[in-house]
Image (cartoon, chains in turn blue, yellow):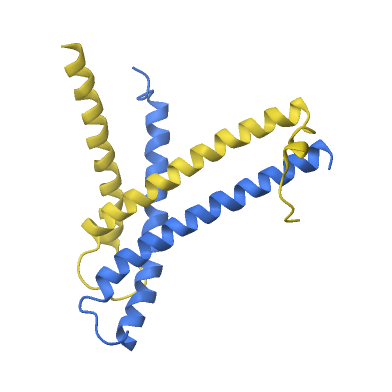
Length: 87
Length: 91
């Protein structure tokens, strides 16, 4: 491997790892929050209604994540422009 | 290409590519930090802004504005805390 392909391999590996870690964190949060919402009283199996709730909850949670991420990035940029981090 | 990267491969990096990789890692670290913080904020704000049963797969408009406000107010609290701490230290 020459320098260029080593660099590309490192970048690829780092991206795979950080994206996997991010996905794992998201799945963990979805499980936690949607279990809380959709399975208030665990029965002997997951009912059809509970299953529907879980898929809805999952999509809704992802929408919330995206919205929060956008709002957070916007705010950080605003604070950077105002030099809020320099004291 | 799933061959693992060995030290001997890394030794082949040119100074220019090393520099580019350092920059890439700095950016990645920042991206990871923002994503982690987003996970924590979404968790906090979901609990505050999406009460009750989940009826469909979309956020309604009041939930959307609550989430955006939640992020801003949380950060306000953060900044207020930091400023107050700085004041306390200077007293």
